[in-house]
Length: 209
Ligand code: GAR
Image (cartoon, rainbow, N blue to C red; front, side, top):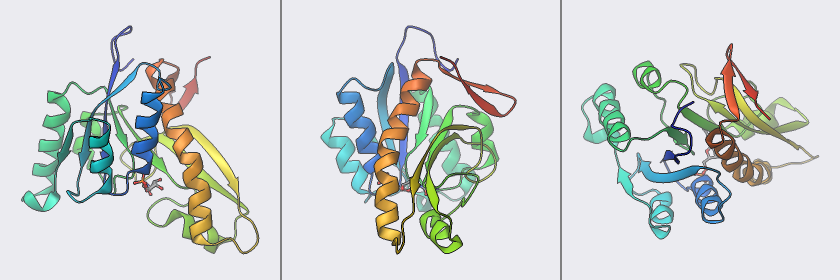
């Protein structure tokens, strides 16, 4: 597994903005609903992200790492990778982190990065997933937690939750409906990983009972 059995699984959460998924994870941790997982670090690529204040209110260490302070994407990701390694992080959680990670970073931390996306992948990857779902006319959408691979919003799927799209659904109402489920799905996925219940086999996740 990713970490030594019997020890806590150390998590870094990467954010870019609002931080509501971060808050859901920290609430779960506070209520002892995060299994063996412990949030040790929150990194934001935006120093003005609301999520930074949320992390601080839970007494979490925060680091702002803005891309425009680095000459290249490589230099940015080298620094991010060094921070992750220096904190002995076992799992990186992308919670609304709106930067595409390069193959260099993904290979360095393969099978140690998870992401939440507001659609039922593989449908509607990329930006504005809720609008994409509405525009396509599907009757259900939802959210997905998955391991990150070299493709955008792809990689072995850990958990998904569907929500119904009703007549005259707005992008706002659909986003809210999905977000409510995201807030349960991401902590639940982290808990399962920390309890070694999530295995990757032939590019698919097997949930061990
Ligand atoms: C969430 O809806 C998350 O699924 C989405 O950004 C939002 C972040 O909200 N992520 C993506 O679209 C990634 N492709 P939050 O900052 O309140 O957690």
